[in-house]
Amino acid sequence: MQVAVDISLPNVISLISQMSLNELEEVKNKIVEKELYFKEFQKDKIENIMNDFKKEDYSTNFLQDLENGLKKSSFYNEN
Image (cartoon, rainbow, N blue to C red; front, side, top):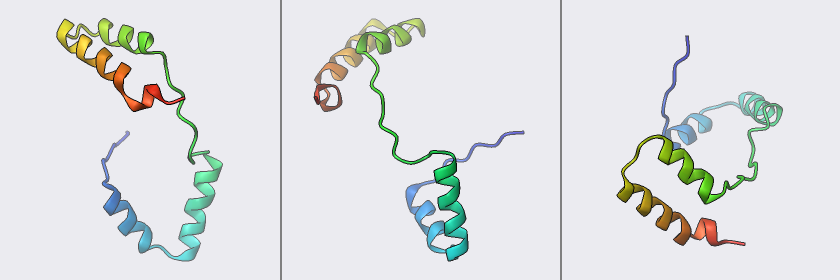
């Protein structure tokens, strides 16, 4: 069985602040072991993103808005 829970950042911070140093060390070790730290996000081509959305039968207006938004976004316009 798998259970998914959405936890807000303030709740995570609150939980961390209640941990002992040993528990924090265990968490740190697991983060390193599972390589959960700050990996650089790999951008996909806008064309690939659009193709994925087209397969899901989104409306033409939505697809046009999405593509225009992606093309104008600072994320896709950074070097």
